[in-house]
Length: 167
Image 1 (cartoon, rainbow, N blue to C red):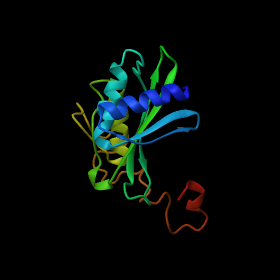
Image 2: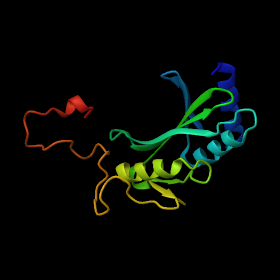
Image 3: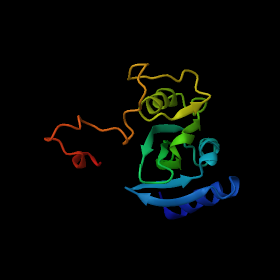
Image 4: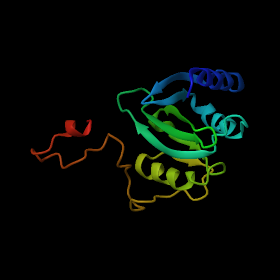
């Protein structure tokens, strides 16, 4: 994506959503925009509806967990404009006790299973989701196993080193 196109998108998002952009950068060859939590879904809707941009394919979405940050949980959405061959990554962060996001299932049907997975593994609650329940873990599981607050292995073992797994 050209720098001119990036600036156009940033300026439009800021104009439409009251300066919602917290940060923007090229990260691993993908234009990445960090937004305020309340502006993420309206901004994605705007990117979808915009007749010039046409970001109408949800490539992926995933939850993020950075336990050392104040807003330790987050969501990341990757969108693709097939007609323009443009990609954009939208990120937002929030405290663990406010792990609630509006659903994207009304816009992208693929979000259904992706949101269920992030609910299951990270505990992000997607308001308005038609069938939000665990998808891979047992229903009576009380933890969300992809959060970094849970150990990967039996802590009594001496032959494993969590630093090898980013912890």
